[in-house]
Length: 154
Image 1 (cartoon, rainbow, N blue to C red):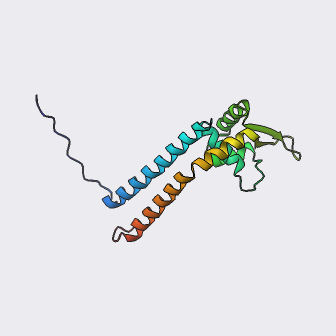
Image 2: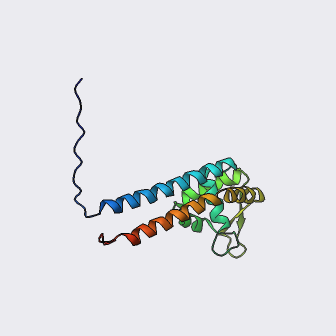
């Protein structure tokens, strides 16, 4: 049987040093591991990853009243308003979110987590605390490695 030769690795035309690529790849791997663990945690608490993120954004709005509108959620999740509306519809049907009309503007609808939605979110967040700590350490390692590196201009 003839051996197939692996193609020779092409020399990159960019000036990104290999060590920088390694640091970035390591960090992205740590971020993806974090995301995957949190997704698994959400599922253990009866939430899809999308519903977990929706509830997190509803409960974690900067104004703290837990009553953002669809537009704010769409922006925070970087999704289209139509996509967020579908996500909200499914969360409402699952009993995790309610829509509340605005007292000041009949065209505006605010979102709030139900008691069950908050319960599941909080349980998932508490379980995921250790994963956030691991991600924080990955950020620190990345920062240290960038500070230690010299001569790559980055």
